[in-house]
Image (tube, rainbow, N blue to C red; front, side):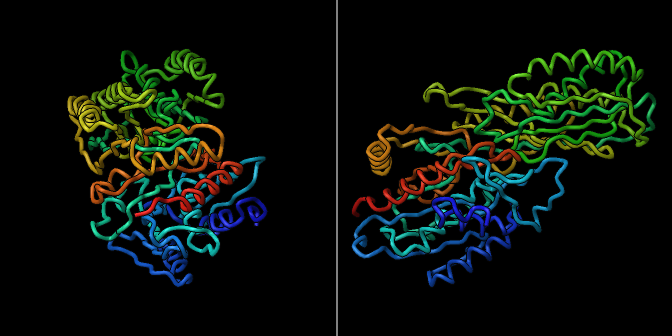
Length: 480
């Protein structure tokens, strides 16, 4: 009920219903059933394909039968991140929402506006009876956030639409016509453990903003794993480090906010004193952009076994060497990040090490170069490296008919020109376009801030603007 009185009411109503359904990536069974039932209850042709994508078809409204058919597309899954002090189970609970001025946000968790607002908007078009539109195919994909397996599993011939409108970008003045591809880089090794020889310390980094590892990668935000690696590096020369455990970050597509390491050093007090000097320098570096950052370095009594000093040094050196952040800016598109890497997750437990990365680029050769840099430094340290989940980028076509139409509608409607851009996020358009090369594609959406973090919030006036813009686009889709 918290969203029942804000406009557009139909969109927020459907968003509330959607957010009552748990929908973590790779665990979308409940939301697939929810959307399937939604389409069937409307009496519309509804199918679920082999991988779990839901397709709902709606005929053109009277007088619109001769217009080009349109695919409306959004993904069902959401990034599940929460603050450490919040007790919340994304697999069983619905998102708890509240209104804060002009923003809708969640209570200590991600909101799911990425891409739930897109899903809710499509639901609203499907159930409407007074919105003119051409023949529609609503495509709800699964698992966009952790592998894009829904888009990858979509087969040729399942869609007949001539134009695809992807509702999954996060600035309402942008028309997106291109995106980055990506590849998961997983570094791993298993080490023999031994008795702890020195004194135990605990290092904790927390309070960082986090954010989208594509859209926010250029902002200079703190990465908890990288900051932790900087502090661990201080043990190399004199402290004979033995790593006991590391627990840093989470999902590949989220800039990590928190990290903890427990290790043995030769002299704990001496190390803490030296590391405190570095701590102060790091806090000063990030004071402007990360005002809530905290670094705690203290004695500990953890009695678990550790890995050897030699292996510990290898891990620390790799953490210090892995590229994180922007790798290259595009020479062709102003202010566009061409390639980057996010050191997303570092886990060391019982001698088992895993470091999860997501490398992105709008140019395949540049994406390969980033991934190969990670592979090279890791293999020098005797670690195993696996590439997986690779997906292509989406090459811009700025002169397409739908882009020109949307630019014209936007300028006439809002008395300003939209930004026609490519983004450094992984949209599904590139993958879908591989099987539907003749389909014209555009991505746009309402303003969402802090996606992939518990600070995620959706702008209410922007949702109104987006809804009005979409309705005008559908009413003016060109003839076949």
